[in-house]
Figure 1 (cartoon, helix red, strand yellow):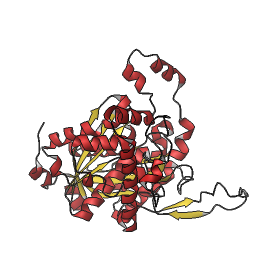
Figure 2: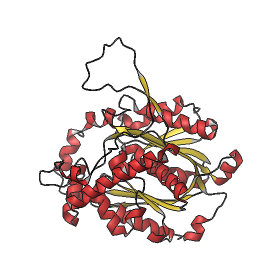
Figure 3: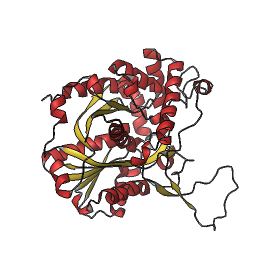
Figure 4: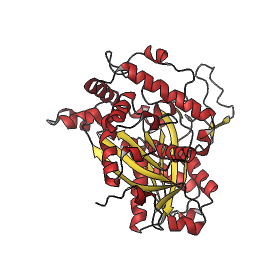
Length: 413
């Protein structure tokens, strides 16, 4: 294992794996948000098409597409392949789907970067998509036989795999003393930062507007089936709530346990959305006349007990920094996915990072969390943030269901 150090990380070489585009759709509320009537393949196709048009890359140059997909039928392979081909990529562009739960599209970046570094290919797309409207609600359970076998397992860790994510949040809060007040403050701050970023135009660099079928007002009378479909342009995240205060959040009832502290206001939202990042070697980018916006350096994963899966970034981030030969102080921005305020607060405290460096433009409590697409969104927001602030080094990290954590290191160009 070679530890790089800050000087090495900031250097440039022809073999570097660089990112030349990092885009996402708006993230919208499942079942009632702006993208609720769009399928996963449609959402992914939009962001892939935008990548081609904004970069000018010849689709034939893209040798492989890896896409994070958590909930979709057949692991999202069919939906992903449809999206790739609909966006205009030729049959020579191969397709693979990745499922590392909440970190799936970030893991797609890491796997693709490794393939590029190996010399097998020199250009590919790492993406992610989730329509939680289409796939979350119909699939709340898992196959009966597997569930029964796990419930009867003599191994507690195996049984804990079935634990609802909200209960893992309650476990973290109870075990590590994360108060309800602190969680509500964190939730309100996520909305405040996101609103400020949106009003400043910050997200315009990373968001691709989507022409979507209109989602009817559930309170309105049913439309006649003969009426033509109305299309609307969705250009902003719609889960962000203006006017959120700590006092308002304090009035919400616990969502998972009558005596708990995890609520709808201090948890990530169930969301629809897609993301895509175009990766290639620096030599390839120069040959194609493309300007990198960032560089992938390295990443790592870590395992923790499933019942407190949210603490995983507190293990993965130090391991990543050790691998890179860096300290917390060397990092300009941390994008930590806000699965729950409880686990976010615990991880921030354990990593020892200044909260001002964490999610400076808001996080998943306000923006939303479409599982397969979130990692790509975090990377896009990180690179956007580094460009905006003039920072150079950033870390993306998130917990993942079943007890895993991902952490990735990136440098702005």
